[in-house]
Image (cartoon, rainbow over all chains, first blue to last red; front, side):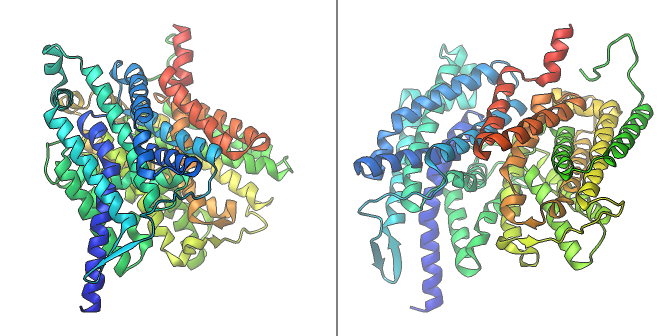
Length: 293
Length: 321
Protein backbone atom coordinates (compact mmCIF):
# COMPACT_ATOMS: atom_id res chain seq x y z
CA UNK A 1 0.00 0.00 0.00
CA UNK A 2 1.08 3.56 -0.67
CA UNK A 3 2.74 4.80 2.55
CA UNK A 4 0.80 8.08 2.59
CA UNK A 5 -2.52 6.29 2.08
CA UNK A 6 -1.59 3.83 4.82
CA UNK A 7 -0.75 6.71 7.13
CA UNK A 8 -4.07 8.43 6.42
CA UNK A 9 -6.09 5.22 6.80
CA UNK A 10 -4.40 4.53 10.11
CA UNK A 11 -5.18 8.07 11.28
CA UNK A 12 -8.85 7.68 10.32
CA UNK A 13 -9.20 4.36 12.13
CA UNK A 14 -7.43 5.72 15.22
CA UNK A 15 -9.77 8.74 15.05
CA UNK A 16 -12.86 6.55 14.92
CA UNK A 17 -11.70 4.64 18.00
CA UNK A 18 -10.90 7.90 19.78
CA UNK A 19 -14.30 9.30 18.78
CA UNK A 20 -16.06 6.30 20.30
CA UNK A 21 -14.29 7.05 23.56
CA UNK A 22 -15.25 10.77 23.38
CA UNK A 23 -18.85 9.61 23.04
CA UNK A 24 -18.52 7.75 26.37
CA UNK A 25 -17.45 11.00 28.05
CA UNK A 26 -20.13 13.02 26.26
CA UNK A 27 -23.08 10.68 26.89
CA UNK A 28 -23.38 11.84 30.50
CA UNK A 29 -23.51 15.45 29.32
CA UNK A 30 -25.99 14.52 26.60
CA UNK A 31 -28.32 13.25 29.34
CA UNK A 32 -27.70 16.02 31.91
CA UNK A 33 -27.42 19.01 29.58
CA UNK A 34 -29.17 17.81 26.44
CA UNK A 35 -32.19 16.25 28.11
CA UNK A 36 -32.45 17.76 31.59
CA UNK A 37 -31.08 21.26 30.85
CA UNK A 38 -28.59 20.93 33.72
CA UNK A 39 -25.29 22.51 32.61
CA UNK A 40 -23.06 20.02 34.39
CA UNK A 41 -19.63 21.46 33.61
CA UNK A 42 -18.17 19.19 36.28
CA UNK A 43 -18.86 15.98 34.35
CA UNK A 44 -15.27 15.61 33.04
CA UNK A 45 -14.03 16.00 36.62
CA UNK A 46 -16.27 13.09 37.61
CA UNK A 47 -14.81 11.09 34.73
CA UNK A 48 -11.34 11.71 36.16
CA UNK A 49 -12.67 10.77 39.60
CA UNK A 50 -13.95 7.52 38.07
CA UNK A 51 -10.53 6.92 36.54
CA UNK A 52 -8.89 7.28 39.96
CA UNK A 53 -11.46 5.00 41.63
CA UNK A 54 -10.67 2.38 38.98
CA UNK A 55 -6.95 2.93 39.51
CA UNK A 56 -7.36 2.33 43.27
CA UNK A 57 -9.27 -0.94 42.70
CA UNK A 58 -6.82 -2.07 40.03
CA UNK A 59 -3.76 -1.17 42.06
CA UNK A 60 -4.95 -2.66 45.36
CA UNK A 61 -6.84 -5.81 44.23
CA UNK A 62 -5.68 -6.27 40.66
CA UNK A 63 -9.26 -5.94 39.39
CA UNK A 64 -9.83 -5.59 35.66
CA UNK A 65 -10.35 -1.85 34.93
CA UNK A 66 -13.68 -2.35 33.16
CA UNK A 67 -14.99 -4.60 35.95
CA UNK A 68 -13.81 -1.96 38.45
CA UNK A 69 -15.70 0.67 36.44
CA UNK A 70 -18.87 -1.43 36.66
CA UNK A 71 -18.36 -1.83 40.42
CA UNK A 72 -18.18 1.97 40.70
CA UNK A 73 -21.57 2.44 39.03
CA UNK A 74 -23.74 2.34 42.21
CA UNK A 75 -21.68 4.87 44.23
CA UNK A 76 -21.51 7.21 41.24
CA UNK A 77 -25.25 6.88 40.69
CA UNK A 78 -25.78 7.80 44.33
CA UNK A 79 -23.40 10.75 44.00
CA UNK A 80 -25.42 11.99 41.02
CA UNK A 81 -28.69 11.64 42.93
CA UNK A 82 -27.28 13.64 45.86
CA UNK A 83 -25.80 16.30 43.58
CA UNK A 84 -29.10 16.74 41.78
CA UNK A 85 -30.88 17.02 45.13
CA UNK A 86 -28.53 19.86 46.12
CA UNK A 87 -28.87 21.52 42.71
CA UNK A 88 -32.65 21.27 42.85
CA UNK A 89 -32.92 22.63 46.39
CA UNK A 90 -30.56 25.54 45.75
CA UNK A 91 -31.34 26.59 42.18
CA UNK A 92 -34.10 24.82 40.26
CA UNK A 93 -36.76 25.19 42.92
CA UNK A 94 -35.88 28.87 43.31
CA UNK A 95 -36.05 29.39 39.57
CA UNK A 96 -32.57 30.88 39.33
CA UNK A 97 -30.65 28.20 37.51
CA UNK A 98 -28.80 30.19 34.86
CA UNK A 99 -25.92 32.20 36.33
CA UNK A 100 -25.82 30.60 39.77
CA UNK A 101 -26.18 27.03 38.52
CA UNK A 102 -23.30 27.43 36.06
CA UNK A 103 -21.06 28.92 38.71
CA UNK A 104 -22.10 26.12 41.09
CA UNK A 105 -20.96 23.39 38.68
CA UNK A 106 -17.80 25.34 37.88
CA UNK A 107 -17.09 25.39 41.62
CA UNK A 108 -17.73 21.63 41.87
CA UNK A 109 -15.37 21.04 38.93
CA UNK A 110 -12.67 23.05 40.60
CA UNK A 111 -13.12 21.57 44.09
CA UNK A 112 -13.16 17.98 42.73
CA UNK A 113 -9.90 18.62 40.90
CA UNK A 114 -8.18 20.16 43.94
CA UNK A 115 -9.41 17.41 46.27
CA UNK A 116 -8.04 14.76 43.88
CA UNK A 117 -4.67 16.56 43.85
CA UNK A 118 -4.66 16.69 47.67
CA UNK A 119 -5.75 13.07 48.18
CA UNK A 120 -4.04 11.21 45.32
CA UNK A 121 -1.33 13.64 44.27
CA UNK A 122 -0.58 15.33 40.95
CA UNK A 123 1.27 12.31 39.45
CA UNK A 124 0.20 10.41 36.35
CA UNK A 125 -1.38 7.02 37.18
CA UNK A 126 -1.79 3.96 34.95
CA UNK A 127 -3.62 0.63 35.24
CA UNK A 128 -2.58 -2.89 34.25
CA UNK A 129 -4.77 -5.12 32.06
CA UNK A 130 -4.06 -7.86 29.49
CA UNK A 131 -5.41 -5.74 26.64
CA UNK A 132 -3.09 -2.81 27.32
CA UNK A 133 -0.11 -3.32 25.04
CA UNK A 134 -1.08 -5.89 22.36
CA UNK A 135 -1.79 -4.65 18.87
CA UNK A 136 -3.83 -6.24 16.07
CA UNK A 137 -2.69 -5.50 12.54
CA UNK A 138 -5.17 -6.06 9.74
CA UNK A 139 -4.04 -5.24 6.20
CA UNK A 140 -1.55 -2.57 7.24
CA UNK A 141 -3.95 -0.92 9.69
CA UNK A 142 -3.05 -0.89 13.37
CA UNK A 143 -5.75 -1.72 15.89
CA UNK A 144 -4.24 -1.23 19.35
CA UNK A 145 -6.40 -3.14 21.85
CA UNK A 146 -5.82 -0.28 24.31
CA UNK A 147 -8.08 1.80 22.00
CA UNK A 148 -10.28 -0.94 20.53
CA UNK A 149 -11.56 -2.33 23.85
CA UNK A 150 -12.64 1.11 25.21
CA UNK A 151 -14.32 1.92 21.89
CA UNK A 152 -16.35 -1.30 22.00
CA UNK A 153 -17.27 -0.85 25.68
CA UNK A 154 -18.36 2.73 24.93
CA UNK A 155 -20.58 1.64 22.04
CA UNK A 156 -22.08 -1.11 24.24
CA UNK A 157 -22.81 1.39 27.02
CA UNK A 158 -24.41 3.92 24.68
CA UNK A 159 -26.43 1.19 22.99
CA UNK A 160 -27.60 -0.06 26.38
CA UNK A 161 -28.58 3.44 27.48
CA UNK A 162 -30.46 3.95 24.21
CA UNK A 163 -32.44 0.74 24.81
CA UNK A 164 -33.11 1.75 28.41
CA UNK A 165 -34.39 5.18 27.36
CA UNK A 166 -36.58 4.02 24.50
CA UNK A 167 -37.90 0.69 25.84
CA UNK A 168 -38.25 0.90 29.62
CA UNK A 169 -40.93 2.76 31.53
CA UNK A 170 -38.49 4.94 33.48
CA UNK A 171 -36.50 5.62 30.31
CA UNK A 172 -39.58 6.92 28.56
CA UNK A 173 -40.35 9.03 31.60
CA UNK A 174 -36.86 10.57 31.29
CA UNK A 175 -37.46 11.35 27.60
CA UNK A 176 -40.83 12.80 28.57
CA UNK A 177 -39.34 15.09 31.22
CA UNK A 178 -36.82 16.31 28.67
CA UNK A 179 -39.61 17.21 26.29
CA UNK A 180 -42.30 18.62 28.57
CA UNK A 181 -41.97 18.48 32.38
CA UNK A 182 -45.38 20.08 32.90
CA UNK A 183 -47.16 17.44 30.85
CA UNK A 184 -45.36 14.73 32.84
CA UNK A 185 -46.57 16.33 36.06
CA UNK A 186 -50.13 16.41 34.75
CA UNK A 187 -49.87 12.67 34.04
CA UNK A 188 -49.24 12.18 37.74
CA UNK A 189 -45.48 11.53 37.61
CA UNK A 190 -42.97 13.63 39.51
CA UNK A 191 -40.55 15.47 37.20
CA UNK A 192 -38.12 15.99 40.08
CA UNK A 193 -37.93 12.28 40.87
CA UNK A 194 -37.46 11.43 37.21
CA UNK A 195 -34.75 14.06 36.77
CA UNK A 196 -33.01 12.83 39.90
CA UNK A 197 -32.85 9.29 38.50
CA UNK A 198 -31.70 10.56 35.11
CA UNK A 199 -28.98 12.71 36.63
CA UNK A 200 -27.83 9.75 38.73
CA UNK A 201 -27.61 7.76 35.50
CA UNK A 202 -25.62 10.51 33.82
CA UNK A 203 -23.03 10.63 36.62
CA UNK A 204 -22.90 6.80 36.70
CA UNK A 205 -21.69 6.83 33.08
CA UNK A 206 -18.67 8.80 34.32
CA UNK A 207 -17.46 5.70 36.20
CA UNK A 208 -17.31 3.68 32.96
CA UNK A 209 -15.89 6.62 30.99
CA UNK A 210 -13.23 7.00 33.69
CA UNK A 211 -12.27 3.32 33.38
CA UNK A 212 -11.95 3.78 29.60
CA UNK A 213 -9.91 6.96 30.05
CA UNK A 214 -7.32 5.34 32.29
CA UNK A 215 -7.04 2.35 29.92
CA UNK A 216 -6.32 4.72 27.01
CA UNK A 217 -3.88 7.07 28.70
CA UNK A 218 -2.18 7.86 32.02
CA UNK A 219 -4.38 10.13 34.15
CA UNK A 220 -3.64 13.06 36.44
CA UNK A 221 -6.26 15.18 38.27
CA UNK A 222 -6.40 18.23 35.98
CA UNK A 223 -6.69 16.21 32.75
CA UNK A 224 -10.48 16.51 32.87
CA UNK A 225 -10.31 20.10 31.69
CA UNK A 226 -9.14 18.95 28.25
CA UNK A 227 -12.42 17.11 27.79
CA UNK A 228 -14.84 19.91 28.74
CA UNK A 229 -14.64 21.65 25.38
CA UNK A 230 -14.62 18.35 23.49
CA UNK A 231 -17.56 16.80 25.32
CA UNK A 232 -19.77 19.89 25.10
CA UNK A 233 -18.81 20.41 21.45
CA UNK A 234 -19.87 16.81 20.75
CA UNK A 235 -23.19 17.21 22.57
CA UNK A 236 -24.05 20.56 20.94
CA UNK A 237 -22.92 19.44 17.49
CA UNK A 238 -24.82 16.19 17.96
CA UNK A 239 -28.04 18.05 18.60
CA UNK A 240 -28.42 18.18 22.38
CA UNK A 241 -29.48 14.78 23.62
CA UNK A 242 -29.70 12.82 20.37
CA UNK A 243 -27.50 9.74 20.87
CA UNK A 244 -27.07 9.04 17.16
CA UNK A 245 -26.11 12.65 16.48
CA UNK A 246 -23.73 12.59 19.43
CA UNK A 247 -21.98 9.44 18.16
CA UNK A 248 -21.59 10.97 14.69
CA UNK A 249 -20.26 14.23 16.12
CA UNK A 250 -17.80 12.34 18.36
CA UNK A 251 -16.50 10.34 15.39
CA UNK A 252 -16.10 13.48 13.26
CA UNK A 253 -14.20 15.17 16.10
CA UNK A 254 -12.02 12.09 16.75
CA UNK A 255 -11.10 11.66 13.06
CA UNK A 256 -10.34 15.36 12.60
CA UNK A 257 -8.15 15.45 15.70
CA UNK A 258 -6.34 12.31 14.63
CA UNK A 259 -5.72 13.66 11.10
CA UNK A 260 -4.48 17.00 12.42
CA UNK A 261 -2.21 15.25 14.91
CA UNK A 262 -0.78 13.02 12.14
CA UNK A 263 -0.35 15.73 9.50
CA UNK A 264 0.59 18.71 11.70
CA UNK A 265 1.22 18.40 15.42
CA UNK A 266 -0.60 16.77 18.36
CA UNK A 267 -0.39 20.04 20.29
CA UNK A 268 -3.09 21.50 18.00
CA UNK A 269 -5.61 18.79 18.89
CA UNK A 270 -7.35 20.65 21.78
CA UNK A 271 -8.12 23.53 19.42
CA UNK A 272 -10.14 21.36 17.02
CA UNK A 273 -13.16 20.99 19.32
CA UNK A 274 -13.44 24.77 19.55
CA UNK A 275 -13.19 24.99 15.77
CA UNK A 276 -16.30 22.80 15.65
CA UNK A 277 -18.18 24.36 18.55
CA UNK A 278 -18.05 28.02 17.54
CA UNK A 279 -19.39 27.68 13.98
CA UNK A 280 -22.05 25.23 15.23
CA UNK A 281 -23.26 27.75 17.79
CA UNK A 282 -23.13 30.58 15.27
CA UNK A 283 -24.67 28.92 12.22
CA UNK A 284 -26.62 25.81 13.02
CA UNK A 285 -27.43 25.83 16.71
CA UNK A 286 -29.64 22.76 16.32
CA UNK A 287 -26.58 20.61 15.68
CA UNK A 288 -26.24 17.84 13.10
CA UNK A 289 -29.61 16.38 13.91
CA UNK A 290 -31.77 17.60 16.70
CA UNK A 291 -34.07 20.05 18.27
CA UNK A 292 -33.84 23.80 17.90
CA UNK A 293 -32.34 25.66 20.81
CA UNK B 1 -32.38 46.52 42.75
CA UNK B 2 -29.52 48.82 41.78
CA UNK B 3 -28.35 51.55 44.12
CA UNK B 4 -27.30 50.86 47.66
CA UNK B 5 -27.52 54.37 49.12
CA UNK B 6 -30.17 54.97 51.78
CA UNK B 7 -33.39 56.46 50.43
CA UNK B 8 -33.10 59.68 52.43
CA UNK B 9 -29.97 60.81 50.56
CA UNK B 10 -29.84 60.99 46.75
CA UNK B 11 -27.11 58.73 45.28
CA UNK B 12 -23.83 60.38 44.37
CA UNK B 13 -23.67 61.74 40.82
CA UNK B 14 -21.40 60.09 38.29
CA UNK B 15 -19.09 63.12 38.01
CA UNK B 16 -18.74 63.34 41.79
CA UNK B 17 -17.91 59.63 41.94
CA UNK B 18 -15.13 60.02 39.35
CA UNK B 19 -13.72 62.96 41.34
CA UNK B 20 -13.73 60.95 44.58
CA UNK B 21 -12.07 58.04 42.78
CA UNK B 22 -9.37 60.36 41.38
CA UNK B 23 -8.79 61.81 44.86
CA UNK B 24 -8.54 58.27 46.31
CA UNK B 25 -5.94 57.32 43.68
CA UNK B 26 -3.96 60.46 44.44
CA UNK B 27 -3.95 59.75 48.18
CA UNK B 28 -2.81 56.15 47.68
CA UNK B 29 -0.08 57.39 45.30
CA UNK B 30 1.21 59.94 47.83
CA UNK B 31 1.05 57.37 50.65
CA UNK B 32 2.94 54.92 48.43
CA UNK B 33 5.88 57.32 48.10
CA UNK B 34 6.59 56.77 51.82
CA UNK B 35 6.61 52.96 51.55
CA UNK B 36 10.07 51.46 51.12
CA UNK B 37 9.22 47.75 51.43
CA UNK B 38 8.63 46.26 47.96
CA UNK B 39 6.51 43.40 49.37
CA UNK B 40 3.69 45.91 49.97
CA UNK B 41 3.68 46.71 46.24
CA UNK B 42 3.82 43.01 45.25
CA UNK B 43 0.86 42.12 47.49
CA UNK B 44 -1.02 45.31 46.59
CA UNK B 45 -0.57 44.63 42.87
CA UNK B 46 -2.23 41.21 43.23
CA UNK B 47 -5.18 42.66 45.16
CA UNK B 48 -5.68 45.45 42.59
CA UNK B 49 -5.34 43.03 39.68
CA UNK B 50 -8.20 41.01 41.16
CA UNK B 51 -10.27 44.15 41.77
CA UNK B 52 -9.82 44.94 38.07
CA UNK B 53 -10.60 41.39 36.88
CA UNK B 54 -13.61 40.94 39.19
CA UNK B 55 -15.04 44.32 38.17
CA UNK B 56 -14.51 43.54 34.48
CA UNK B 57 -16.18 40.14 34.85
CA UNK B 58 -19.09 41.62 36.76
CA UNK B 59 -19.97 44.15 34.05
CA UNK B 60 -21.07 41.23 31.90
CA UNK B 61 -21.67 38.46 34.47
CA UNK B 62 -23.32 40.47 37.22
CA UNK B 63 -25.18 43.18 35.28
CA UNK B 64 -26.32 41.11 32.29
CA UNK B 65 -26.19 37.60 33.80
CA UNK B 66 -23.90 36.10 31.13
CA UNK B 67 -21.21 33.95 32.78
CA UNK B 68 -17.76 34.25 31.21
CA UNK B 69 -15.53 31.27 32.11
CA UNK B 70 -12.79 32.48 29.78
CA UNK B 71 -11.25 35.16 31.99
CA UNK B 72 -7.95 33.25 31.91
CA UNK B 73 -7.99 33.45 28.10
CA UNK B 74 -8.51 37.23 27.96
CA UNK B 75 -5.99 37.75 30.77
CA UNK B 76 -3.37 35.53 29.10
CA UNK B 77 -3.92 37.09 25.67
CA UNK B 78 -3.31 40.52 27.21
CA UNK B 79 -0.12 39.21 28.80
CA UNK B 80 1.15 37.57 25.60
CA UNK B 81 0.31 40.49 23.31
CA UNK B 82 2.28 42.65 25.72
CA UNK B 83 5.22 40.18 25.72
CA UNK B 84 5.25 39.98 21.92
CA UNK B 85 5.06 43.75 21.33
CA UNK B 86 7.69 44.36 23.99
CA UNK B 87 10.02 41.92 22.27
CA UNK B 88 9.25 43.23 18.77
CA UNK B 89 9.08 47.02 19.23
CA UNK B 90 10.01 47.63 22.87
CA UNK B 91 6.91 49.79 23.42
CA UNK B 92 6.33 51.48 26.82
CA UNK B 93 3.90 49.89 29.28
CA UNK B 94 0.86 52.16 28.65
CA UNK B 95 1.02 51.34 24.91
CA UNK B 96 1.23 47.62 25.72
CA UNK B 97 -1.83 47.89 27.96
CA UNK B 98 -3.79 49.66 25.22
CA UNK B 99 -2.76 47.02 22.69
CA UNK B 100 -3.74 44.16 25.03
CA UNK B 101 -7.10 45.82 25.71
CA UNK B 102 -7.72 46.39 21.99
CA UNK B 103 -6.99 42.77 21.00
CA UNK B 104 -9.11 41.37 23.83
CA UNK B 105 -11.95 43.74 23.00
CA UNK B 106 -11.83 42.42 19.44
CA UNK B 107 -11.95 38.82 20.68
CA UNK B 108 -14.91 39.77 22.88
CA UNK B 109 -16.61 41.20 19.78
CA UNK B 110 -16.06 37.98 17.81
CA UNK B 111 -17.11 35.67 20.66
CA UNK B 112 -20.12 37.80 21.56
CA UNK B 113 -21.26 38.29 17.99
CA UNK B 114 -21.13 34.56 17.31
CA UNK B 115 -22.64 33.12 20.50
CA UNK B 116 -24.76 35.74 22.29
CA UNK B 117 -27.79 35.06 20.12
CA UNK B 118 -28.33 31.81 22.03
CA UNK B 119 -29.17 31.15 25.69
CA UNK B 120 -26.49 32.33 28.10
CA UNK B 121 -25.29 28.81 28.86
CA UNK B 122 -23.95 28.40 25.32
CA UNK B 123 -21.96 31.61 25.62
CA UNK B 124 -20.50 30.23 28.87
CA UNK B 125 -19.49 26.93 27.28
CA UNK B 126 -17.94 28.76 24.33
CA UNK B 127 -15.84 30.92 26.69
CA UNK B 128 -14.72 27.81 28.58
CA UNK B 129 -13.61 26.28 25.30
CA UNK B 130 -11.94 29.59 24.33
CA UNK B 131 -9.59 29.27 27.29
CA UNK B 132 -8.53 25.81 26.14
CA UNK B 133 -8.05 26.73 22.48
CA UNK B 134 -6.08 29.89 23.29
CA UNK B 135 -3.75 27.86 25.45
CA UNK B 136 -3.18 25.50 22.52
CA UNK B 137 -2.49 28.45 20.20
CA UNK B 138 -0.05 30.12 22.56
CA UNK B 139 1.73 26.85 23.34
CA UNK B 140 2.42 26.69 19.59
CA UNK B 141 3.51 30.36 19.29
CA UNK B 142 7.31 30.05 19.28
CA UNK B 143 7.99 33.80 19.09
CA UNK B 144 6.87 34.24 22.72
CA UNK B 145 8.54 31.05 23.94
CA UNK B 146 5.90 28.44 23.13
CA UNK B 147 5.53 25.71 25.73
CA UNK B 148 8.87 26.56 27.34
CA UNK B 149 7.88 30.11 28.26
CA UNK B 150 9.82 33.34 27.94
CA UNK B 151 11.83 35.59 30.22
CA UNK B 152 10.93 39.28 30.24
CA UNK B 153 13.45 41.79 31.52
CA UNK B 154 11.97 44.02 34.20
CA UNK B 155 13.70 47.45 34.27
CA UNK B 156 15.22 48.11 37.68
CA UNK B 157 13.79 51.63 38.01
CA UNK B 158 10.30 52.87 37.17
CA UNK B 159 9.79 56.05 35.10
CA UNK B 160 8.36 57.85 38.17
CA UNK B 161 11.35 57.06 40.37
CA UNK B 162 11.19 54.16 42.83
CA UNK B 163 11.35 50.49 41.83
CA UNK B 164 9.61 49.15 38.72
CA UNK B 165 7.28 47.05 40.89
CA UNK B 166 6.16 50.28 42.54
CA UNK B 167 5.44 51.69 39.05
CA UNK B 168 3.48 48.52 38.15
CA UNK B 169 1.48 48.94 41.36
CA UNK B 170 0.49 52.54 40.46
CA UNK B 171 -0.39 51.45 36.92
CA UNK B 172 -2.65 48.73 38.27
CA UNK B 173 -4.12 51.17 40.79
CA UNK B 174 -5.05 53.51 37.96
CA UNK B 175 -6.52 50.69 35.85
CA UNK B 176 -8.54 49.25 38.74
CA UNK B 177 -9.94 52.66 39.73
CA UNK B 178 -10.80 53.36 36.11
CA UNK B 179 -12.59 50.02 35.82
CA UNK B 180 -14.62 50.64 38.98
CA UNK B 181 -15.62 54.10 37.73
CA UNK B 182 -16.62 52.65 34.34
CA UNK B 183 -18.61 49.90 36.04
CA UNK B 184 -20.48 52.37 38.23
CA UNK B 185 -21.15 54.66 35.27
CA UNK B 186 -22.54 51.74 33.24
CA UNK B 187 -24.62 50.59 36.21
CA UNK B 188 -26.33 53.99 36.58
CA UNK B 189 -26.78 54.64 32.86
CA UNK B 190 -29.61 53.68 30.52
CA UNK B 191 -27.39 50.81 29.32
CA UNK B 192 -27.15 49.56 32.92
CA UNK B 193 -30.93 49.44 33.27
CA UNK B 194 -31.12 47.67 29.91
CA UNK B 195 -28.61 45.07 31.13
CA UNK B 196 -30.56 44.57 34.36
CA UNK B 197 -33.68 44.00 32.27
CA UNK B 198 -31.82 41.41 30.19
CA UNK B 199 -30.69 39.64 33.36
CA UNK B 200 -34.20 39.49 34.78
CA UNK B 201 -36.11 38.52 31.62
CA UNK B 202 -34.46 38.77 28.25
CA UNK B 203 -37.58 38.17 26.18
CA UNK B 204 -39.47 40.86 28.08
CA UNK B 205 -36.54 43.26 27.68
CA UNK B 206 -36.44 42.65 23.94
CA UNK B 207 -40.21 43.15 23.72
CA UNK B 208 -39.94 46.40 25.67
CA UNK B 209 -37.53 47.77 23.08
CA UNK B 210 -34.16 47.16 24.77
CA UNK B 211 -31.55 46.58 22.01
CA UNK B 212 -30.49 43.36 23.74
CA UNK B 213 -27.99 42.02 21.19
CA UNK B 214 -26.20 45.36 20.77
CA UNK B 215 -25.98 45.86 24.55
CA UNK B 216 -24.71 42.36 25.22
CA UNK B 217 -22.01 42.55 22.55
CA UNK B 218 -20.88 46.03 23.66
CA UNK B 219 -20.67 44.81 27.25
CA UNK B 220 -18.67 41.73 26.22
CA UNK B 221 -16.21 43.97 24.35
CA UNK B 222 -15.82 46.31 27.34
CA UNK B 223 -15.43 43.42 29.80
CA UNK B 224 -12.92 41.62 27.57
CA UNK B 225 -10.87 44.77 26.97
CA UNK B 226 -10.56 45.42 30.72
CA UNK B 227 -9.45 41.81 31.29
CA UNK B 228 -6.84 42.20 28.55
CA UNK B 229 -5.59 45.39 30.20
CA UNK B 230 -5.29 43.47 33.47
CA UNK B 231 -3.04 40.89 31.82
CA UNK B 232 -0.75 43.30 29.93
CA UNK B 233 1.54 44.28 32.87
CA UNK B 234 1.78 40.62 34.04
CA UNK B 235 4.98 39.69 32.11
CA UNK B 236 6.88 42.50 33.89
CA UNK B 237 5.41 41.47 37.23
CA UNK B 238 6.33 37.77 37.01
CA UNK B 239 9.39 38.28 34.65
CA UNK B 240 8.94 34.69 33.42
CA UNK B 241 5.76 33.85 31.52
CA UNK B 242 4.75 30.35 30.38
CA UNK B 243 1.31 29.02 29.34
CA UNK B 244 0.51 27.20 32.62
CA UNK B 245 1.14 30.34 34.69
CA UNK B 246 -0.72 32.67 32.29
CA UNK B 247 -3.71 30.30 32.01
CA UNK B 248 -3.80 29.61 35.72
CA UNK B 249 -7.16 28.11 36.69
CA UNK B 250 -6.92 30.08 39.92
CA UNK B 251 -7.39 33.31 37.92
CA UNK B 252 -10.56 32.01 36.27
CA UNK B 253 -12.01 30.73 39.54
CA UNK B 254 -11.09 33.79 41.58
CA UNK B 255 -12.56 36.15 39.01
CA UNK B 256 -15.91 34.40 39.26
CA UNK B 257 -15.78 33.72 43.00
CA UNK B 258 -15.00 37.35 43.97
CA UNK B 259 -18.12 39.04 42.53
CA UNK B 260 -20.31 36.15 43.70
CA UNK B 261 -18.95 36.48 47.23
CA UNK B 262 -19.21 40.26 47.27
CA UNK B 263 -22.52 40.52 45.43
CA UNK B 264 -23.06 40.95 41.70
CA UNK B 265 -25.75 43.64 41.52
CA UNK B 266 -23.58 46.70 42.21
CA UNK B 267 -20.02 47.95 41.59
CA UNK B 268 -19.02 47.63 45.24
CA UNK B 269 -19.66 43.85 45.43
CA UNK B 270 -16.73 42.74 43.24
CA UNK B 271 -14.43 45.22 45.00
CA UNK B 272 -15.31 43.84 48.43
CA UNK B 273 -15.07 40.25 47.18
CA UNK B 274 -11.72 40.85 45.50
CA UNK B 275 -10.16 42.57 48.51
CA UNK B 276 -11.45 39.97 50.98
CA UNK B 277 -10.63 36.84 48.97
CA UNK B 278 -7.21 38.03 47.85
CA UNK B 279 -6.24 38.96 51.41
CA UNK B 280 -7.48 35.55 52.66
CA UNK B 281 -5.39 33.87 49.95
CA UNK B 282 -2.34 36.00 50.61
CA UNK B 283 -2.54 35.01 54.29
CA UNK B 284 -3.24 31.35 53.49
CA UNK B 285 -0.37 31.25 50.97
CA UNK B 286 2.08 32.04 53.75
CA UNK B 287 0.66 29.53 56.23
CA UNK B 288 -0.69 26.56 54.21
CA UNK B 289 -0.10 24.95 50.82
CA UNK B 290 -1.38 26.50 47.60
CA UNK B 291 -3.67 23.53 46.85
CA UNK B 292 -5.49 23.92 50.19
CA UNK B 293 -5.64 27.62 49.42
CA UNK B 294 -7.46 26.98 46.13
CA UNK B 295 -9.76 24.47 47.80
CA UNK B 296 -10.68 27.20 50.28
CA UNK B 297 -11.66 29.60 47.46
CA UNK B 298 -13.71 26.90 45.74
CA UNK B 299 -15.57 26.00 48.92
CA UNK B 300 -16.22 29.65 49.85
CA UNK B 301 -17.60 30.20 46.36
CA UNK B 302 -19.92 27.16 46.46
CA UNK B 303 -21.01 28.15 49.96
CA UNK B 304 -21.97 31.65 48.86
CA UNK B 305 -23.74 30.52 45.67
CA UNK B 306 -25.90 28.03 47.55
CA UNK B 307 -26.50 29.85 50.84
CA UNK B 308 -26.18 33.57 50.04
CA UNK B 309 -26.86 34.02 46.31
CA UNK B 310 -26.69 37.82 46.59
CA UNK B 311 -23.30 37.83 48.29
CA UNK B 312 -22.09 39.96 51.18
CA UNK B 313 -23.91 43.04 49.86
CA UNK B 314 -27.13 41.03 49.73
CA UNK B 315 -26.63 39.93 53.34
CA UNK B 316 -25.96 43.51 54.47
CA UNK B 317 -28.96 44.89 52.62
CA UNK B 318 -31.19 42.11 53.95
CA UNK B 319 -30.21 43.06 57.50
CA UNK B 320 -30.96 46.74 56.96
CA UNK B 321 -34.56 46.09 55.91
